[in-house]
Image 1 (cartoon, rainbow, N blue to C red):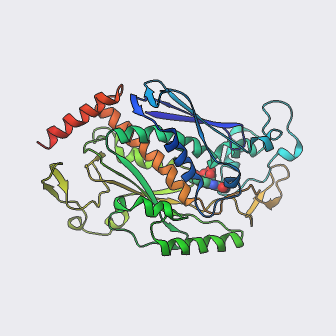
Image 2 (cartoon, rainbow, N blue to C red):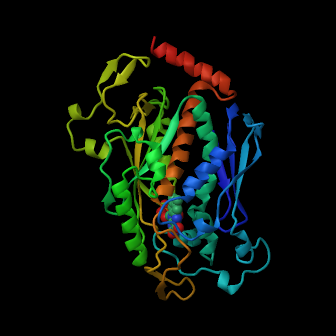
Image 3 (cartoon, protein in one colour):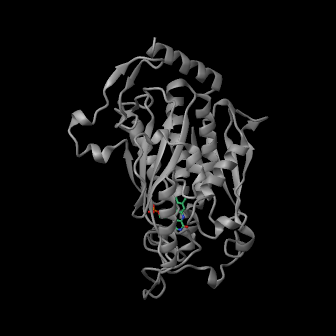
Length: 383
Ligand SMILES: Cc1cc2nc3c(=O)[nH]c(=O)nc-3n(C[C@H](O)[C@H](O)[C@H](O)COP(=O)(O)O)c2cc1C
């Protein structure tokens, strides 16, 4: 199962096409809209979130609430489009004010115009903008719905913003989603939530921005998804690449990788035991559910680091692309902190990586065949 997206930040709409979708997945549009709302949530977002309430419109691949085995197309309208018809016109000549000539440090603007021979950073920023991640979240709804059919759930929460961090939970995959969604920071720790909000208030007042870290986890997985046999199909590598495909995500940790690097092997590796309905299990999960490029059957636990938002209301120095004089970097309406939203995008990415691994192992045409194949496999490995 793969997706591709199209659409500019201030264009008419975003589109996602999901291919490789088995028939028979129960797809609830309200659930996709709920995920889109979660992506728009979070203290520290810019003014745009107040204008837009994203809704996914399903254009293909679904009948009477169920996928039919054809590509699923979803669109998300940009409700702000009416204010951008001049700047984003498909034909005609651009007005002088429509050009952006002060590339922002930390954004795609400068390398983008160099590579495409454009004289307008807007040609780049419209697509590099993380508005595109709304289409990913809509597409991710298909992957999540498939995973639900095989008993897998994906979740996330914010662990830190700037230098404010909650105490790391012993098992990040067991964090209560209700606590997460009740927090304006999507952080299960109420005290840390308030401290994060205060840090964002201070950053906003100072024309600053903040990054942070989040966990994204999955439960209910069978062991043996992914492979040790081919570098490009190792599931840990695919999950890391999926996380790094999200704008502003610059670091990925699987399990307790960075702490593990400081400890001897006997205090890191998860001992193997036998018992209960699953047969083999691990007494700990420092590997984050992945060994040898495959799932172990324990929850997948990934932590990601997001850099601070590049658009600053107190801009850094840049160079005007016409005159080459030093000027302030351009300002677009912008988030101060988007870590809670990025975590929701990461859920969609993890869902795609895991759905792809299930379909590789268990076939891809029809959900009932896949569910039967998963059950037969589970029976074989835990007799
Ligand atoms: C959910 C989300 C929201 C974002 N919002 C903004 C924003 O409002 N302003 C901004 O400059 N960057 C924002 N970013 C980050 C930029 O899109 C990103 O830094 C830029 O595309 C450059 O890519 P890179 O950081 O991966 O190098 C956001 C990222 C995510 C994941």
